[in-house]
Image (cartoon, rainbow, N blue to C red; front, side, top):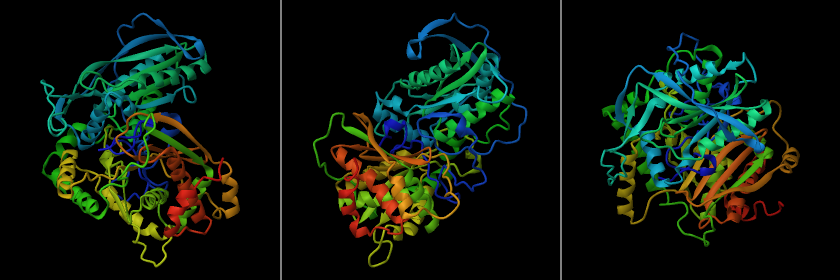
Length: 571
């Protein structure tokens, strides 16, 4: 399995967090459309994100009494100075937050956990990139929170969500097996314990904001000790006795991006109200036991049948041969921020009655296939697996890879255009989402069987991660005109914000929002996609969709030429 784009801390193959907002009826997508009854955005504005948000959390249930909160710690160690932002000295201390849950126990890893553990093992020692971080402002509205309030809320959060009290369990001999240790690894839930929380004392609100982000960076920068450390790192920033920010950094074995948003929501409610409502309906241990039971195995087998059919219909890989000497570092991330693309995606999606995520997935797939001379595209979207009611507020890692296969002849017209493919792409996307729950051990076995049969590795090495919390509907009024889109195109910004030495994928596309613009990042192996090709793919997505929104949907026969010229007129 391919690991995610580290610039976003998630994404790529390897069952890391991400969403597709294609349809509420799909069995797997994490994000839901704006019209979906369970979509809320309450958690999103409060939190600053490091890592990929997985979906919009379910609506907050009616408040009921919460579990007994943890006590304020008995002792606080002496404060020590720390180097703060802008050269200021920030006083820090460690507060041990006690918690006590209802039970302890052991279980195998869930399939989502197996997938991310596989990715983590392949990324060591750089696996800190899988950490998911959030900053929650607490001084912006509502009653001021005291340090004691925030400490009690953190203890209650640990008690409410079993994932935060669950650590990896490995065999005593630390053996490594042919399955990469996946079948040997398990999870161990603790009933009680203490979480060390960093309490930073800032001088003023401006200093507090900077301090919170500095803590986020610092706590995110190191890998977790998976078998011994609690899978959450927490910090509080206070001015006087008033807490201004809470910082959470999560181990990806404990939560995906959706789970992180649930934690942000619940922590805010626990601080403000002392309750986060009814406890979650499901737990990671119960899910693991269900997945490893007979019904889970049958569902997994049905999903892998979809994968085998897709693998047989597609090329063995989308990028079969290196085309250049790799750069140093080898993996480059290109990023385009485009208001024009945002308007165009909404317009095309509305006109063709599909989701914006389908539009972007199809554009990426068409460009990859055309650029490599394939008649069929295979892309691995990251699927959130959150449509089951019991999973919408479950804190765990549920997201896994899906397999999207698109025959470029599926439009069924003599001279098909990009938009002619959208109906077939939408159906293929839904099939992909429904087949994204399976045992990664069996997935690996399928890959090995097909490798032996075909004499070559079978893996697309082409990933798509729509990380938006919710897909915004098209703005009211008429669709943008061609002239308006040209004007918006003048605001497009492109750059190479990051490089890294190792990502086990060749093409990893991430979709986020930045104000009124779409931000699309592509992390790629420069041996297969040199920097100028990364740039061309990103500008190609913009040009393909914007041209379609302007009423001139490009013919598929001309997409390769479009890719060769995309962005060359831009400075």
